[in-house]
Length: 211
Image (cartoon, rainbow, N blue to C red; front, top):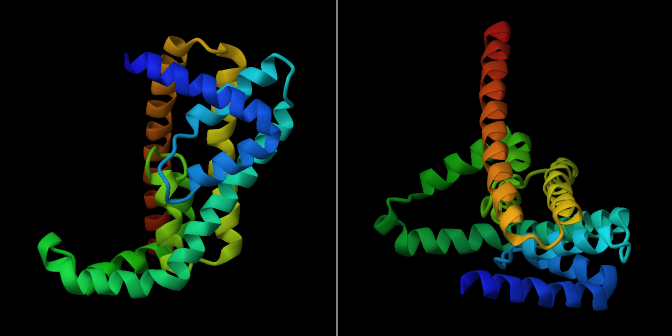
């Protein structure tokens, strides 16, 4: 039953993307990259399938996917930049004690992002669920816009090309797509772990060198 629903949604999105052409991909990826939960898998995999059939351009799909991801990420970034502090302060003041969250906890998280924002941004864009929300702490910590855009583009580009290639080579074979997507997600999480460990080791060596 669940599989039939997924296939129905996928078929609808294929039609919507085809009818809306590349603009549809841009809009859907903007939504996916903002604070509205929306899986990019059901946008880019069907688009990749259409590219394999010669009905869409692989290059333009990627361009629209990355541009849409950046647009959605910027929405979160600027919302957090201009409204984040005010809203979070109110929530922490009212409800923080119930979740063991204090102003000091928030400040520590902000300082952490200010020190390690680049790698956090890049890795966050590769992790499911987190990639939709990682732009919020970036804006909240006032991460400079240039590195924010660079690492958002890198992370979004890697994830987008994986999904488009899945659709390109596997078409509408739902079972194979689910299997490969699960394996790729695990591989990406392992890669993120390796990057984090390498980053920590390099940071410690650098600190020892200059201490």
